[in-house]
Length: 260
Ligand code: ADP
Ligand code: MG
Ligand code: MG
Image 1 (cartoon, rainbow, N blue to C red):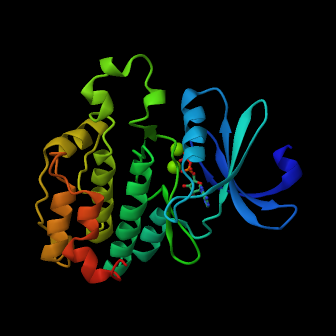
Image 2 (cartoon, rainbow, N blue to C red):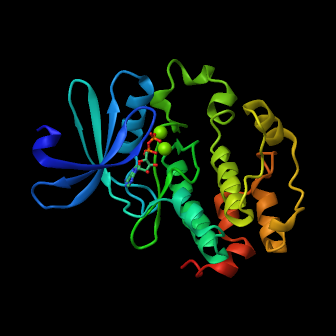
């Protein structure tokens, strides 16, 4: 079946590099969903479809409901996150409350290990790609930059010849923990930890800058919060906090309901 036989398209929800996301409504049930159109051709687009199909099944990850395709495009029908992007909520609220920040990070720290266990590294965690539902739940979205790791079938050639970097190095899932640390910094301090006027200076800052805890914005950031931030934004990947480490950190426990 063609998608327009099944869904009626409504307004645009967002636009990106390889396609756009539109609100759609099931002609049979009236259920509202989000439909992401991805133009065929680029390998990266095929990978996004494949990864979305491979995931789906965690409350913290946007659920894929159906995939349609025609000659030009794929259509990913996803659950609708009607409260939009975390980015816009952050901008609206100005200063994000500690409880809300801790809950977002906690939900993210449940969603990220699910992806990692499924062999998927997101690699693009940021407030544009974290969506919110009407119940205030967060959903990780946009697997357009994600890669699959530890998947023997995806590794071409003989596994015995694959370098350790391919298995754990560049693709390491620890990159998602760093991004989560940057997000927590943005939520708590209101600014990004590593800044610069150009791409090069931002990259220099990421490689070298230390969290200085200096300036007015830090006044409201408690010692436990600073401790958590420094442990997530650790450059040494072997000591960088894991998702479990974040979940059990005193700052998270203090501001959120205990895990069962
Ligand atoms: P891109 O790869 O182009 O960044 P995204 O998957 O991030 O595409 O989607 C682009 C934008 O579309 C998001 O930032 C968001 O505003 C909106 N969007 C995407 N998926 C949904 C969804 N399931 N529900 C509501 N809005 C969505
Ligand atoms: Mg995006
Ligand atoms: Mg994308």
